Figure 1 (tube, rainbow, N blue to C red):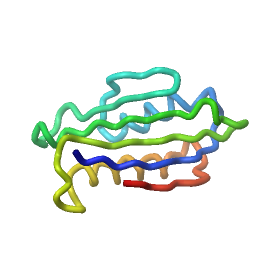
Figure 2: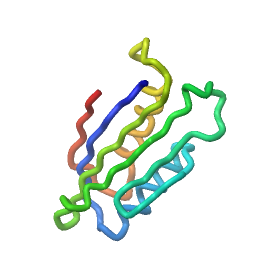
Figure 3: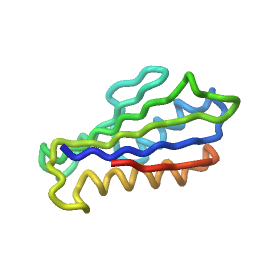
Length: 116
């Protein structure tokens, strides 16, 4: 299973955080399939990728660590594909999602780290 993780620290009004996450994921052509106050799951629905390549993106909002207008997010991008190449399909989607979160005009990006 391919799995890529990014951690973001953003500055945004807590009231706008959840809706901004959803807008950003939808801008990446992902469909929101589940959401709570501190968790969002989005998936690819219509794509030319094989079933094993279909990507799921999970966003965890660290509600207990929100300080003022700073929020921590963890994004996990995964699929059932074996990551036999470094530059695989899931990695490409992960990069696209990460770029969308980095470039969002809705918040100020304070920090981003990646882990595999």
